[in-house]
View (cartoon, rainbow, N blue to C red):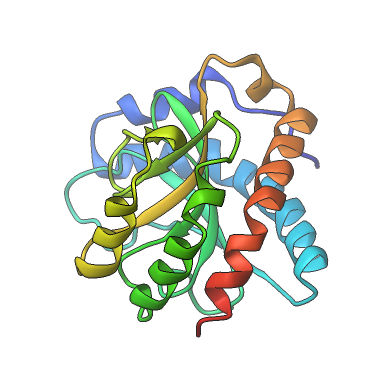
Length: 205
């Protein structure tokens, strides 16, 4: 089956109380859609990059009390995991979908990646004005690309827990989310726009 879109029931998953109850809804409502989206995007990235990429779907296995406020799929070049590698993410909070090129705090070579991004700072600020930046993958808020400063990237480099994610948010009521083909198209376009920065990041390893 191909992806047919997200609906309000998917976003309402994050209003369900209780860890097990919310996780059950994530597994039933969202993860099958992540599998559909992820297979298509993984194939696209593998073809684009010329090497095999691997799909990871968040399991939230470390949680024992608090239910997750978001959930996601990740695509990375490593079969065993993604957190220590530059990767792409697609996921949901209760009010939006995010599409990210993600550099999170587990990266062992953050400083090298940050320096590469600093070199491309002017290019980054010229990305389409729909693009946003997050400095913490746990938080819903993101800044417009036009507000990005070099200091944000320097902080990502110098602060151990700092992160850098760049991509797009799509509001939960945006009609494009109900059109699976159009949403996949937006995902692929976003990935293609950010692939040059992904290539630069993995070349620092």
